[in-house]
Image 1 (cartoon, rainbow, N blue to C red):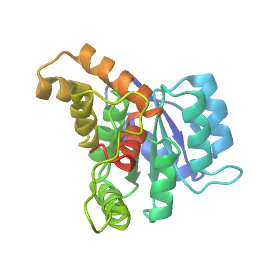
Image 2: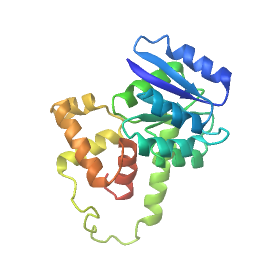
Image 3: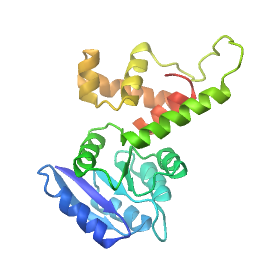
Length: 221
């Protein structure tokens, strides 16, 4: 059973999402919160597997709450679920450690799929949001690429990624779960988990979403 905490300052939205989620046999809503501060308290008390986090809320917004939660509870997956698709919110939410970013107008099946993916250790971003992220990476690559080709600089990592870890990182960037990565690379899920743990440590990040962002920044993909 996947334990979910709902965080939104609008009661009707919390109730509506809770009703949708509890139709699913493998999901249960263990609690709700009306702002980021309550979310931190509820997370500590209820130990959810996934937190659905709104952005704009009183007392403490979703970005700040996500940053605190992912630091205090790195094992918990945070999905930003909001009406805002502004670039600022998208990138700040992902930088804060969110493993997913979905809009509230997404189909309920998409939200449920995101919860399951994140609970399983994957990262999942709604396609329309993912296009923004890819476009931003492309823009940064264009603005930082020299006009004249130069030899690639040495890896900035203290310990470079192995070829297999590169394969795993690329699969994570494509939104694959551990099971899907195992099938693609013809290895066990346990081996995939080991590779993921190693590359997170080498990249100096807490979760898969930040690994993709860091990997793009370093030109590893």
